[in-house]
Amino acid sequence: MLFALMFIVKPVLTGETFRISANVFQRVETKYGKPAVQRLRAWEDLIRKNNRLPEHEKLKKVNQFFNARIEFVNDIDLYGKKDYWATPIEFICRQAGDCEDFAIAKYFTLKAMGVEEKKLNITYVKALQYNIRHMVLTYYKKPGAEPLILDNLVDGISLASRRTDLLPIFSFNGTGLWLAKQRGKGQLAGRSRRIKSWGDLLQRMSENQF
Image (cartoon, rainbow, N blue to C red; front, top):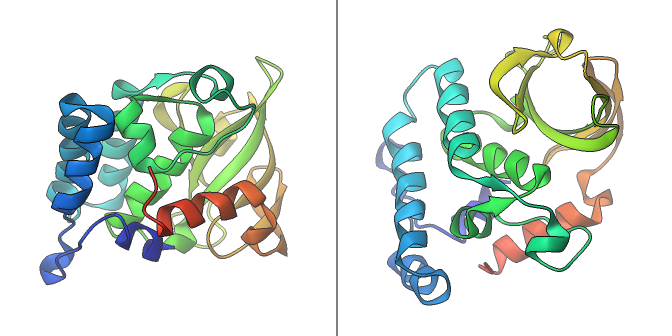
């Protein structure tokens, strides 16, 4: 679903360089102020300066970028809604969001850095320690491999087998929706458009809303 990002940026194709359009920066400054523009430029730099790194280094850079800079805030407190999936720009400009927003921003950032979509899944889990539903990003180095977990609750990146505090429920990306097996991707259950919030998010990104 990189097409969604192409509506909010003007990619320079030489070297797959990622650039955010001047119009987006102007709109961000009007709506969120100059500090938000600085945060957005830092995101642009993250993508542009690190897109040639090995993938395990990209994972570390992206996970650290968001976990260190963004505050966890529930949707009801931030948006006045029980559940709202923010676009990466909304998330970065507000400098706040919940677990879905962290996972979504990491997903699109890694895609913009050249990580193949088939290696990435946004995964719903149950966080057993807190007895809550939670969302993380999972990365598969190759098909059938044990995934790595990128989690806003934990700064380090771990193999799924080491995250015994998480119980997988289902995962999805722009290709499909899977019912989760223990620590694995699981059975294909349908197209990701079945998840209304995901469809709404992509629509807002395609319409350049933030």
